[in-house]
Image (cartoon, rainbow, N blue to C red; front, side, top):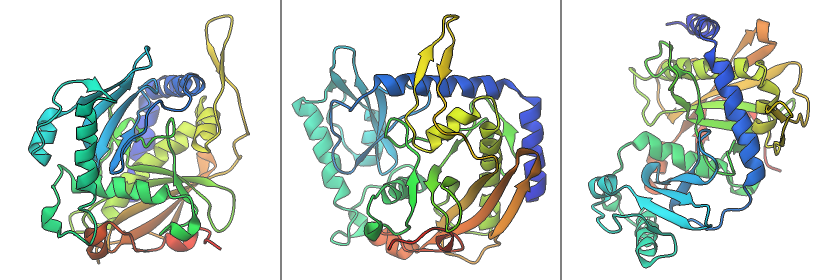
Length: 346
């Protein structure tokens, strides 16, 4: 499908299926309530492991991942205990690691051994070790995505491969923003349990104020999965974000995306009221970016798509990385149309 057809199909599906508005209003209400309940976590993760949250969680249950591969669940209990529940089947399959099969305390010897194993495995993703020593996880794409999240999360401009970009986090953790679409076939289909946005980021462009960036990650660049094809999936998700920001809960999603701490109060009628922090701009700009290895496939980039009825403009760009360099030590060297759209480190 052409990009314009995909956009119109996405709009039609959102208009025909209104349940998403109430559902996403509920998500942001839960986020606001849980933001107030959650302070700092009572434990620290090990190097090489990443914690992920989800909009459906209460901020006390996390997915623990190694290079994007889920290896355990971590829960903070009401008794202020932290529990580690390993995913034994996956750990045996991908890492030949058979220790710590049952739920254990985070501070136990078993949990310490579990974390030490993955800390040692993470050291193998450097130039000091041959690639053959690395354990292969289920999805190379998830590994690339996790490495990108860690790269974008760096704070100092001098350390970053791409400046003025930060992933949007939930409870200060990585997460995938849900959508009501299955778009991986590049023909959007409405689904209550739809696909998640690979990376949703907050960026500072060369001109204008901070805005949102929808990123679609691919670990290959081939004719059947070209940059233009990947862009069709990213555009579907970006159109949804545009509609979400213009929905009745849009102002609160904007505050959340812009990293403003949400506050909520219970009204006398039992409803939850989220307080507005800073008014959303009248006109919105959303960057839509594909990330994949360098290649020569068909492109759709450096294009601007107006969504007139939403007073929103989508800015479509490419972002490529050098796969040979990445495979050596997970370092990113970027090219494409997007790097020149962001403010540089000075």
